[in-house]
Amino acid sequence: MTVFVSGGAKICKAGVAQTLAVKPARGGKRYYVATMIPVDEEDRERIRKHVADRNGLGFETIECGADILSCLQYDTNSSFLLDSVTALLQNIMFPPEKNYEMDLDAAEKCAEDVALFAKSVANAVIVSDYIYSDAQRYDESTECYRRCLAKIDRLLAQVSDTVIEVSAGQLIFHKGGLPV
Amino acid sequence: MILIIGGAYQGKLDYAKAAFSLAPEDIFTCTGTEIDFSKPCVNALEEFCYACIQQEMDPIAYVQEHREDWQNSILICNDLSSGVVPIDPVQRQWRHVSGRLCQYLASEARQVSRIFCGLEQRLK
Image 1 (cartoon, each protein chain N blue to C red):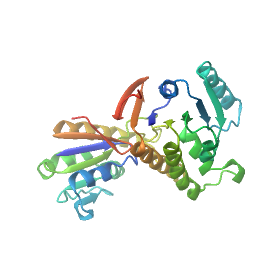
Image 2 (image 1 turned 90 degrees about the vertical axis):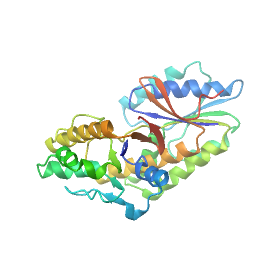
Image 3 (image 1 turned 30 degrees about the vertical axis):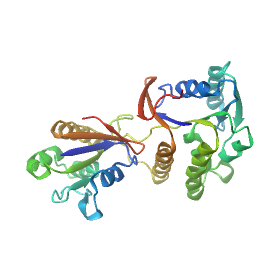
Image 4 (image 1 turned 180 degrees about the horizontal axis):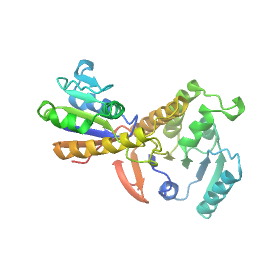
């Protein structure tokens, strides 16, 4: 099954997603799909903290900054935690190797790829960020990024069995229920 | 009146079109300080608020004056309530009046729906 998790910053999305991803794996494998490409010490510190949080939960880490379909070479009969679509889209839409120049075609393809990934594995928990409720007039590329992320979010919400918004560590169910 | 709120790009208009069988000609999209309430659906009320702020007009007073005109309408507004208080006074005022307008409309509405990633959450 596919579970989509979103919400604001620092509200325990990762913690909730980890718990949900551990549940269905039982004896099976658990993969953590790490999407962040660290660029500085602050990023590395965040990663260290997340790695420590996952310690003992039995996740094998797959480093995947861009091509999500490359994860399908692993045992697809497993539980995959993808954290996060936000970072994945950022890497794809503003590729570091192309001097962060915006690539809209790649952003379009990202939505389809993530949905295909979700469909191709036994269990997927996918984390995104709700960045749509502020009163800012952003520059065109930021606005484009929000639009593309929302498109992915909506597609994932559509194909997921369960859609959860996290608020202060609490779960708001917009679709489906807890994985059994 | 039915009020539909939610963040940007969440599919508020798509929800309204599907739920109430709206055709393109049924929808008025706000861009300035006037609203055509003869259309069954008024979209982007936050843009109406923004235009009013720029013209130093009071959008809530305008909506209240036209109260009879939107009793059977479907009204759609972006939720701008999160994030940092904007430094720019126009954007700050924009957030303030959009929030107050939604409060007023929600109190008047017979149904309030929040759209999250394309999915409806019934608030009232």
